[in-house]
Image (tube, rainbow, N blue to C red; front, side):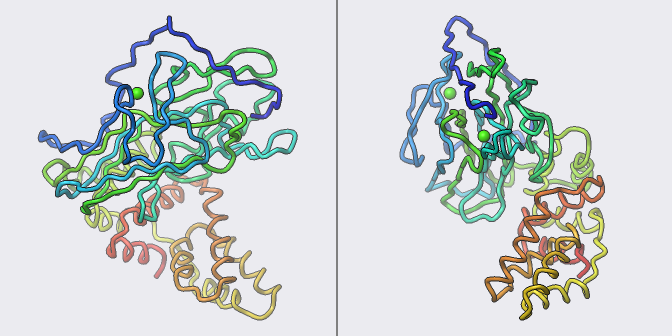
Length: 389
Ligand SMILES: [Ca+2]
Ligand SMILES: [Ca+2]
């Protein structure tokens, strides 16, 4: 947190027992009547985490004694499940506890100390697409020691670097009993709970999820996270509603709408739709007007003898903007030289840092990310076509 002298005070209050709001869970994925098979579930109240988890640390919330797996900071936690029954999809649902003074999009404090961005990631081993890669902030109040940036986060957007108010998309705010006294000595609740659920095309007998806090998390300030109510289901075609054209259209309209949580849900529902969705996106995502000749020139210059020209070409690529993203990724895969690869990656990173402000370009960026998340050869074809190939 920005104020070095601020203390996190953990309040333990048994007398306030708040009944967990039932039915808050979002109806995220439409499933047919037949229930899928739950292959793992744990609320950590009675059953300790088993060897499927890489860590077995369980803590209790100050309010309501809720047991959860955690708290972790920058440690990488994994959940490995094997001998799954025959399936076509896996769905993982969980609650993410964001605890203490997470600083969201802030980078440095007024004293110049690194305090963020406070990022949390979730992914599947062997997959290049992260299910969550976002910053989180618990600073949903004004205080002299909290900067404006620290009051913003990128969650729930699927694009990193976006700016939304602290705790956007949280299912619970300040319900766990963690409190923080800022320099004005006012105690404020600093916790939030996010309900996450992802449907993933998957058919192997084994799956491993990874969860990790990153970047600016400050363990000394108790900034940590935990998981609760983790459930994994192995599903078949019959459990998952196939997206017809009307359904795809409706979901695509949600992208770029006013409801950010709905947007992210729509993204992952579409991502599970595979080639049908890839083909659907071919006519929906705006085609980029990419100057391929110029791109090719810069690419060549990156490998040149002259340092200045290499610098200029890198800058030129950055200035071509997000429409060259697919070409950049392709070039990174093909690059033989380590320096060229590094320079291309730097250009790509620059684009990720500042998502497009223009609504149509933002929608395009999400569409392109969607194609990467689908990850099939057909999706790669469509991504190539949309990149002026
Ligand atoms: Ca629990
Ligand atoms: Ca921090």
